[in-house]
Image 1 (cartoon, helix red, strand yellow):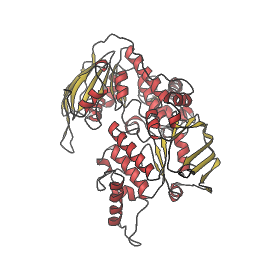
Image 2 (cartoon, rainbow, N blue to C red; image 1 turned 90 degrees about the vertical axis):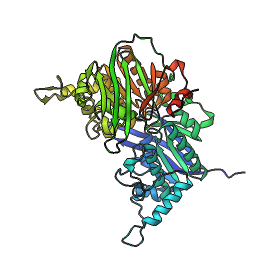
Image 3 (tube, rainbow, N blue to C red; image 1 turned 60 degrees about the horizontal axis):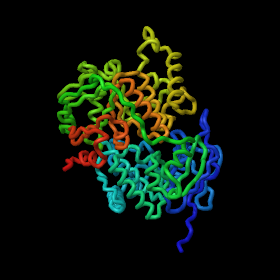
Image 4 (tube, rainbow, N blue to C red; image 1 turned 60 degrees about the vertical axis):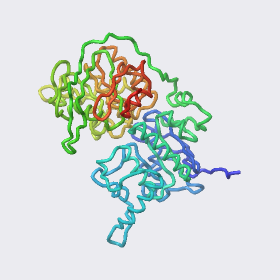
Length: 510
């Protein structure tokens, strides 16, 4: 018989309070040796906060942490590392202009003597780790030049290089392609088989069911139960998570399709840095009352397409028409005022001013219009009233309401704030990129209903998503991108995921 596994980490009665909110309310959680333990909960349920306590980013107001039988004090991430605890954050902590090697070494530099870093030995060790865990990373590449999936592998190597055996993954698949998710799952299983103990935060029930041994559900800062994963179901977990039954299917009402609201004609874009054509002769339209979904493996031109439509890039050739008007070289604000709403791919870089209060971000698209300003003087009262209305309507949760620093919100609540702001503009055209990235199942259901309501109101919606389920459920038409071109136009009811996947990979059904 195998010896019974014992807890390597035991968090007992952890309480963490922020102004206006109890983020963790008397939570107890144990992590066994060699297990993958999932944390599941709504946006803002306290999952990331609890893991930040374990990693030393926050000091709890109550409770204690044990490693095996010893009570340990974790005052900062350096303490956490000394106890073998590492963390991959939802938003990676990497220096973009540094190489992979320099990012891994940062803070853990091996010294040849008191003056020099032994880079040769460090590089050899990191390459050996990369090969051992099949991470396949170029240690000399700069972070800014590698994909998001590769950046995540760098974060994993940072933990392994520091000899961490307790690994925390906070929403590790939120920004990955399906192919990268599959690779990550293999890596996690390899780490588990090596004897590592893993805490895995995710909103995705299918991932939790596939990868975890046990799952703890949090709701509104409290632990509502811990379960052996194979003895429960996605439906049971989703109900515990949000406190009600979740509908996984969407009901689309037949609507009348109107005129083209967004038209792209022979659109091309050549990167000024690499001189490579990232978009090549793309033409399509989106009409009022329809949702057009763009499917494709990340890196096939979807991001550039979104940036061109939003005005963050300008085309090398071709034209973009919004409601019949050529906006190809117009500013971002001009496009917004002309009727384009935009839910961006990267909410931190393009969607929010993180160090501004929430009310400021929620009125960002309207502050230059009356009643939000008059004669150049801002009307703060109007902004506050708008923000109160939006956080109530879209259930945006934060410790201090509309006065909360936007940075302090969970990733999912930041996303809900952007969606609330963009829908409130009442624009004729919605460009939604990775619409539900980082949202829990309850929030996804709610946002999908909002998108369908926009469609019923005659809005034209262009949705770019890596989630094939989302594309299949919401779209009236599906366009598949490969290598910067539209290679297929399909009807959701007349195609399959397998057919879409074949086009995404550059193949053609026989």
